[in-house]
Image (cartoon, rainbow, N blue to C red):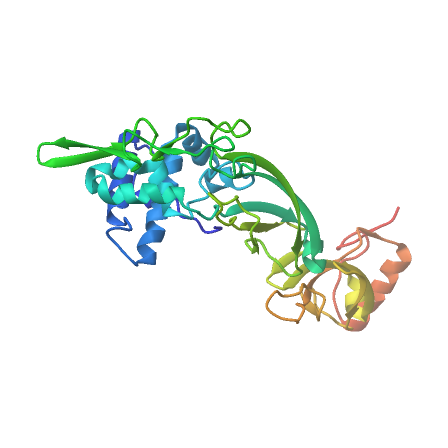
Length: 373
């Protein structure tokens, strides 16, 4: 999900396209990749779902405005509806956009698909985005997350009818969810206006869910985030997604990781890079310099005569890898640090050193350093 294509690109329309153009573009793609036209073709089914996700957002003025402003990030954080997260089940597409297909497929095949909505179906997968620090990447952590989703109503077991009652077949469409009208040589199918495509009607609706068969649920669960994750890592938590339909299993929850930027460290997979300012005398004479790593304070060994801009490696001081046991390295870029002022005695020593090395320097009052007053 981290690499979702642009919705306008998926439908092949410009960002300024009107609602009618967007609908026509989706209709064309839906017909091209319809499962009935491409039986047993998983690639076509994925494109069918992708086009539906794009149309769901771009055909809704509010969702489209959010998408135009924030892109896919507009629907990244919360669980409030699909909102561009995509479809896991083609039956949901037929349920939402059945009128798009009626003109082409008539009442027969689509009616069979409508009736299948009364069978047990798996709930949708959900996506949740969470941020962690670089320090937490090093150690891993357990984290509580909260989100809202839907589940089957416990009172009616998802039927939508009161206890002791059952949904009945719609008298208008005979349970197909569609009505078919003849227009000359053609048969035109449309969503049944009585049952709204469900194929069934509820005479005595369940009070807790108001006949919907579904209720909202606020959930709080604890997840385990292992060491070594990176931005874009997705963790699957089985059966923690949307509740199933008519006794079907729940979907899965996918937790997507975002790693916050660190003020001192730059990450390159399992390796870390940092800049270390070192006084010029320590570069010349060598030193043991304490530096703060992610694991705590460590000692960086600087050899005598080290050049400015040299990078020193501290093995095993980087991050763990998800793909193996080896820990990455820490690379320290040395930057020379000169004092802003020096004393008279320090200047005298430096001038003597310059004389011994045969290096010409400016006289009193000039040069790189100014004396302390």
